[in-house]
Length: 272
Image (cartoon, rainbow, N blue to C red):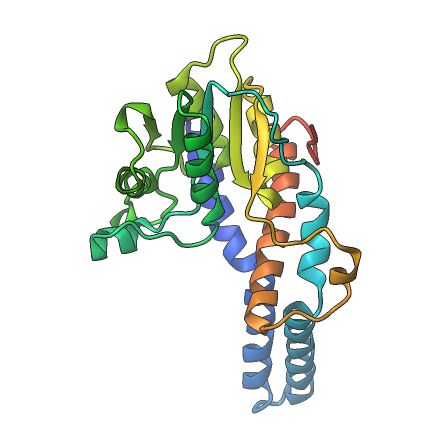
């Protein structure tokens, strides 16, 4: 990949660490707590209160669901009468390569639906190719284990024929997923490819693949919302789920903006 891609990757990782709502709010509480014991105690108390209230709002309120709903409602799940596709593309983000290597057992982390739904589709369409795209998103080389290797081990254990598998091991983000996988697979005109990823991640993924010149059919999974209006008004428990959801959804919305401004997506909020 080009130097620009490397810069984009590292900047996105570093900037997100500072921009994650839970990190920002926790930092406010910690800095404020220290300032309380100095001559800036008044400002410190304000920071503590602001940070604590922010954590409470993000952790308990349905803010994360409000952010997720527009993303997850953007693409419908294809119906049961869907024609057999040429292949199934599964985006990385579900396997834990470090734990897999340490324990010697394929281990899923977040977004397990990407894998489980891909397996179900592979069995439903036995002639379709199964493509997993995901390298290492680690910033430090010592953690650079590719996710595709962990996915391959899991697919083999489940009984997927290795002859059907295509593994893309070098991508570090969704843009590289699209570009590197397209170069590896070389799809032909008239072929039908399903794109399997989390529903909240589908708009950005779809726009990136379309910008890369690959027209795919969205197959969203791993929904965080249920599509019912009432769920958007109740509290979220436990608090850790609310904080995690807000962090992930804010990151996704920022990603949509960054990818559009960087010319890597064909729309700010891509749709079918």
